Amino acid sequence: MAVFRIERFTPLPAAESWRRVTDWERHGTHVPLTSVTVPTGLPTARGTLFVARTGMGPLGFDDPMEVVRWTPPAVGRAGVCRLEKRGSVVLGRASIDVLPTNSGSHVVWVEELHVRLLPGWGDPLLASCGRRVFGGVLDHLLDDPVQWDR
Image 1 (cartoon, rainbow, N blue to C red):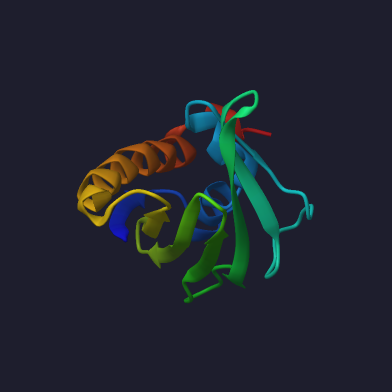
Image 2: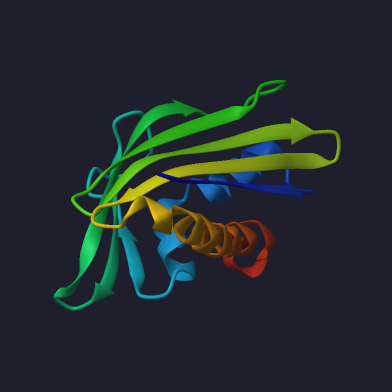
C-alpha cells in the first residue's frame, strides 16, 4: 500500500480551509482528465458518497469514496474528515484534518492507496505521484482567491 502525507499552512481560518478542501467537485478541476460528482448530494455528512472519474470517454475508471467521519472544525477543535475508497481499481482511505492556528490553519492530508494489479514494488512511485498530484490540488484549493469569491 502506498502511503503519503501532505501538509500546508495557510492564513485562511480553519472553517474556510475546511470548506475549500471538502468541496469534492472542485478537486476534479485540478486533476487532469478527472471529474468528481456527488451522487448523494450536498451538504456533505457521514455517509456522503462521491465519485472521481479519471479517463476519457469509455477509457477510464471510477474511484468511489464514502465519508465515514465528518467533524467540521469549531472553536478550539480541529476538523476531521475520513474517507474510504471503495472502487474496483483504487482502494484505501484518506484523512483530511484542518487544525486552527494562531495565524490561520494547518491542513494535513494523508492517503493510503492500493491500486489493483500494481505490484508492491510500485508503491513508492505511486506515493511520489500522489504527493505531487494531491499536493497540487491542495495548493490550488487553498491558494486561489478568485475561484472562491462569491
